Amino acid sequence: HDAVDVIRVKRDGGTLTDDQIDWVVDAYTRGVVADEQMSSLAMAILQRGMSREEIARWTAAMIATGERLDFSDLGKPTADKHSTGGVGDKITLPLAPLVAAYGVAVPQLSGRGLGHTGGTLDKLESIPGWQASLSNEQMHRQLRDVGAVICAAGSGLAPADKKLYALRDVTGTVEAIPLIATSIMSKKIAEGTGTLVLDVKVGSGAFMKDIEQARELARTMVELGTDAGVFTSALITDMSTPLGLTIGNGLEVTESVEVLAGGGPADVVELTIALAREMLAGAGVTGVDPAEALKDGRAMDAWRQMISAQGGDPDAVMPTAPHIEEVRAEADGVITRLDALGVGVAAWRLGAGRARKEDPVQASAGVTLHRTLGDTVSKGDVIMTLHTETEGRMPRGMAALTEACDGAGAVEISDGTEYSDG
Ligand code: URA
Image 1 (cartoon, rainbow, N blue to C red):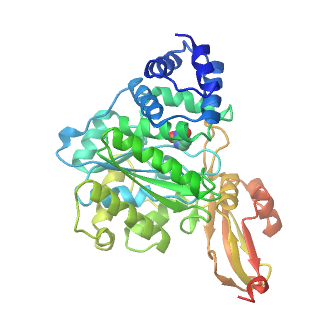
Image 2: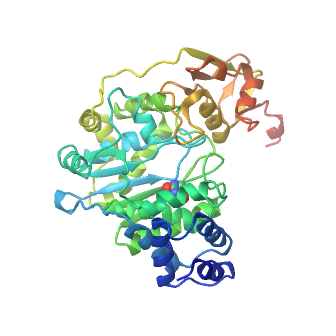
Image 3: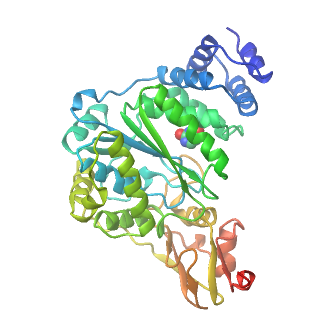
C-alpha cells in the first residue's frame, strides 16, 4: 500500500476499499503513515465525504487499533449516553446514578473540556478526593457493586482516535461529519455498552450550528451503532442558550446535586428524565417513571455511592471563588438573547475552561444565571454573577462582559417595541 494512492482516491472523489481503510488507519496509528499524509486524507474526507460503508469500515478499523471492554458477565444490562458537548451541560452527573437506580449499569467514559465547552471529568474533579482514572478491574467492580461509573477513557481504547483527533484539531479538519461520527462511535462501541443514547446538540454553543447538520450527524451515528450491534438512539436538543443556571465546574456539581435531591432547574430535570427514559427503554426497563427516583432519594443514594467509590467526599461543599461580580440590567425590558456561546466563552475566560490540553481549570470559576431567556427585567436587576479565582480575569460591567464573550454578545435586553405589532 501507498499513502499517496489512498489520498488520491479520496481527493478525486472515489471510494476507499476496505483494505485501503484498514491499512491506512492502522499504519497511521503505528507511525508508518505520516501526520502530513493523514492530514491531507482528512481534508479530502472533509471535502468529499464518505459512504455509509466507508464510515462503518473506518470505525471498525479505529476500534481494531485498541482494546474492547466487555461487560457481558455483569449480569445486568448496560447503557450509556454521549453528548456532543455544550455550555452548562452537566446532565451526565445526575443521569448516570439515576439510570443505575433502576438496575442498569452505566459505564460512562468521559472527557475534559477544551475551549468553551465543559468536560464532565473537570466538573467531578471539583469534588475533593475524586479520582478520574480507574483500571479496567476497578471499573468492572464499581459497575457490579454501585452500577454507575464516570471515568476517563484509558489509553488502550481506540488509540487511532487519540492521535487523529489531535491532528484534526490543528489542521482545520474537525468539522467533517464522517470524522466526528467515527471518532465518537469508535470509542463508544469499544467501551462495550449495550445501549447508547446520543444527545446531539444544536445551536451557537454546540459543534453543529444548524439543525440539518445535527440531523445528519445523529443519523450517521445511529446507523454506525446499530450496524455494530449497539442499541442506539439520538435526541437532538437545543444549545442556543445555556443548560440550567450554572456554567463552571464546581457550580455545575452543586446544581446536579440539587437535581438529585428532587429540585434544580426545569430544563436540566426535563432533559435528564428524557435521556434516562431512552436509556432504560433501550436496556429493556419499561413501565417506570425516572422522575420518581429523583424524588424519593434512590438516585441520590446511587450518586453518593458512585462518588465515594472513586475517593470523593459526597458531603463536601464546593469551593467558592474569592472574586465575584454581579452583572446588572442596564435598562428595563425582556431578555431576548442569552447566548450559549457568549456565556460559555465568559466562563472559560473566568477560569472554568482551558486553552491548551495541559492547562489546569479552576473549580470555583464560572457564571451563575439569575434570569433566563424571555424573563422581564428592570434596570439594576442582577442578571448573572461571575466567579473567578484570578482577579485579573474579571470583566467589570456589561461592556466588559461583552468583551469577555469575544464580542459574542451574551445578553441582549430589548424594550419590546420591535415585537409590539404582534
Ligand atoms: N468529540 C469527539 O470525540 N470526536 C470528535 O471528532 C468531535 C467531538
